[in-house]
Length: 369
Image (cartoon, rainbow, N blue to C red):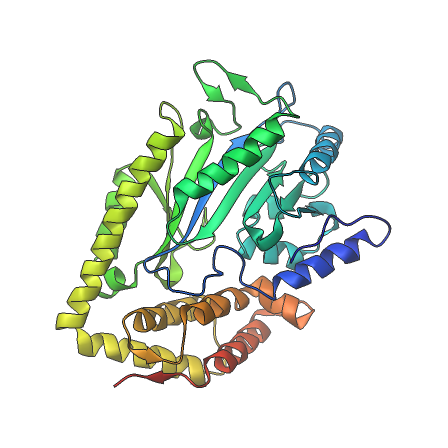
């Protein structure tokens, strides 16, 4: 789906054409033809830095540009990443950056970067590697459902290939050296995106989230750090990487996520047994509003789509698959809306277009019973 890195005088336009292609599919972390259940997606990220080179926050622009050029050459030629495309942050406009961020391929911080920063994206968006964000390299692998061990294995292969050509900053007794002290050690952050619609509906999601934070886990919203959990979407990840191996960190996180899945399933069972009328009402209201509104804000859309998603997963909605809801959730993000419109839209224009897109994709659905 993604072409190789752009070159020549039309490189900027070529990269935009590649980003246009992204809108034809939901990306690897959402592209599933069956329901993944409570866990929507998994992600593993590794932070790495080049030895004897200043971290991006301390390096001068010329130094960042030189290193970025060197790393782009390495990433565009990786055997372990299928058909990588390299996007230079200096040549992308705000809308294209937002599309990449909304697809979880780059961070908010990389969106703010220009010369000397880039991202390499593999075919199907399964693997991406950011250059000169907080660290010299941020490698990540994403997949639908709960698939963390496989993501780590895949990402370790990419990491090993890069290390064959680059000496990493590493210290005995500490591990990989990173710009943020909390990443020192393995440099690994693993996370799962969960839909906790049942717990939210029974009023138990807040104490669950508070308990996770007390256990030392990070809990964030759909778009990661600094975002709230609209649409009952929660990213749960480890916070510390020093003193434990990758497998130990992953094992502990997997146990907690499996416990969360059980809590959510119990909440849904209670809704079906004792709160069926309230659940059916919430699902019907969500579908009605989404089908008939004229203006639809992004946060309201996520919350309504969350109730509708819960209804689909509990058998209350006909002629609607999770795959279609995943597509709607992504295409109604601000960057995607403006990319489809091929122009910058003000907030009200985005809200109008969002309502139109949702309605066109929910036609033919119905409530069961």
